[in-house]
Amino acid sequence: MSVDQFLQHIRHNDSYCLPDDWMQGRTVYGGIAASLLLEVLLKIVPADRQPRTLTASFIGPAVPGPVTVRTELYRSGKYVTQAQAWLEQNGEVVTTLLVGFGAARDSVLQKAAAQPPQMPSSQSLTDMPFIPGVMPEFVKHLQFRWALDEAPFSGKGSGHIGGWQRLRESGDSFGPAHILMLLDAWPVAALPLFPKPAPFSTLNWTVEFLCDWPIQTPAEGWWQFHDHTDFIGEGYAHTQAQLWSPAGLPVALSRQTVSIFL
Image (cartoon, rainbow, N blue to C red; front, top):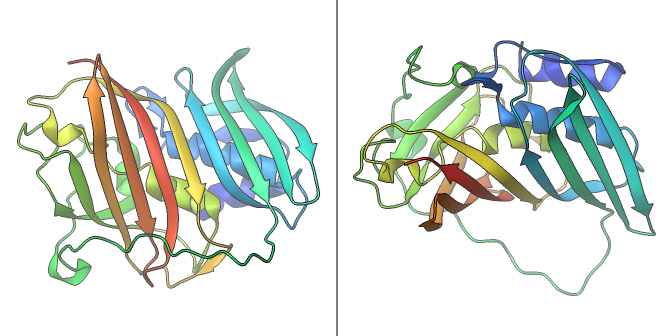
């Protein structure tokens, strides 16, 4: 199932199902689960409210099949709406999403976001091959061109990664749910520091959106990504990432707390 097919189903239906071809180990890819909850919340908030910040908690494995979604709109003021959604399977919460939506307003203050780091161009690089049984299944839905640092589990990394990516099947209009699927797709920046393969899982994920929606850009355009590790200790890694559109527009900031078992 393509990203746009998945999102269109959510927008036009009140029953939801996680696809079986977006797996990440024993759970459905976190970007898919978070995107589902965000799209459901977008149906209940005022139309002028854009998602500005969100926090996702991955509580348990989400498996392919039917899911129940609960929502609560906490408060909707003149400019800001706060709402939360819960993804449930078999009576248990597996993912939660808390979102702050905000309407645009005039302000005398402006400061541009950071420019992307220097890295080889997408045209000078080749696609990272999809290796079944080694890479998570969801990776087959995206293209990656690795530009910075060593491979995951090489033990030779510097704690940051970067490169280019795009969805294999998408239209020319990108909303915040598309961005979640792009942002969460890269290996966390700590993985090249691992001397060998070891289990890890995202505990908490925070995203801040920096632009208005939708972004109109050719589907074949490459999105630039950079992630660096702030701290690793006591079995947890803390990373911070940024995403830029094919036109170089700063799109989103991302922070993750990752449980590591090494």
